Image (cartoon, rainbow, N blue to C red; front, side, top):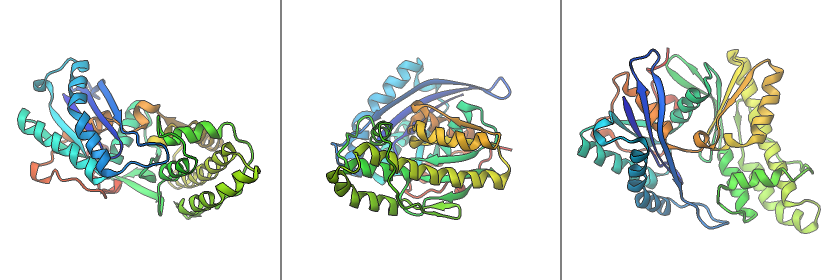
Length: 342
């Protein structure tokens, strides 16, 4: 059984092909292709929905052709077409969904609409082998602490305003850092050169976090601090990372204690950050546990995660009728019935 996965909820356009050998128990999983093309706006700017949608429309057909060529398959080999139904940016989501619908009609294939967040979780579980972890999902659009219970991925805590990735990206714009390969990555590299910690607002409310205050504070004060020579750009990046990651580690530890888990799985684009992984590992090691994370192939938005989550749902008999293949910018992780897990 082969699934084609199409992801385009933000500025990353991903196409993935995954094979599940149903003759074994559990099925043997093989990644056939996992290609990605990223829209990079100019330094100091964010990506707008209309520009991102145009990028996806311009590149998706070529990406699908290249993925199928790499996998050495034809349309008749594909069992199901999976696409990101949400959450995400409306224009880019719709651009990719239209292609998924068109291919399904042309090739006479079933469709499965996938929750973007669940895609991250299922690919992380598949790659790392984590059994029942507390999941920290951190990206440009989402920040959630999640645990599985009774056929749902339950949200224990989340960002009350902006996501942690958005916080980092927006500060990168203040410093006019390049958007390539990613603004958060460039913040991380600068932070490695910093050592002077600036006291920043630290907002944890129970299991939830807030990043708008720390962002407003550092955006407002950065020009003054840099002009005075008291702090360098590296120091400010270091301070921002240390503060927001400490907030995430605190809430994740509380979730571990609540459910009695010794595993943490970090997913989402910010999950690539080595300092976040290091801080999380320090906490988890003290609890006698283990941290699971993936590299940029699977942390950053990609098509293979949509294919993986979609094919798992498809194996339970789930499909998305054509008339229900609309996209939604708001699609919570805990809305999905996870029929494929015990």
